[in-house]
Image 1: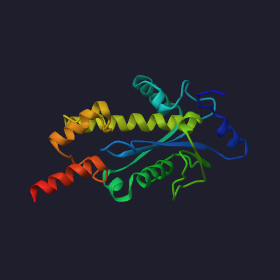
Image 2: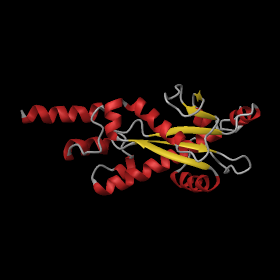
Image 3: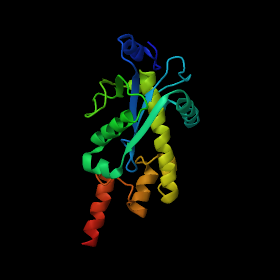
Image 4: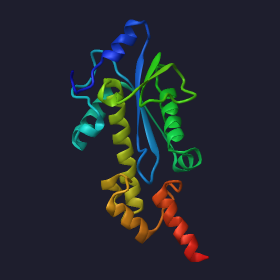
Length: 211
């Protein structure tokens, strides 16, 4: 049993006559701010970059290198759901919305989408299978995890320049000690998810004080 993803799920689907298999994953369900980003990646047999793995197991430099290779060698679509959509829908539904948008944006419509996790998004534009821990099992999902992670990290670096002090260029918006301290000291930005408990609690305290 290998601890690295492989192409067996995709090969099994292709052997059944399915015309193309896309891996789908998201980045940014846990952070307190910023969009949730999803990627759909359709790998081309014979043109698969070496070293694809779950994005969490790769260094930032390695992710960047693989991201560049994937953009050149694979069909890639990236989409997001906004902070407003996260707050109105909830983070799970917003993640699924971003996934649907990513699949719909692929240049070629896949015959099957392999979704990381245990749920298939509603309104997906093609048949799908949910793959638990898919980024550790499927090369296509691993590729999508890399694209989603790199894209979202870049978004957070840009937002960090607009809102210095929160450390988003380092923590990507996750509730780290420095981020939580900055949230208390500097307040809530328009990019914070108001439905998330630490942000909601600070807003509640501010409203209590101003009354």
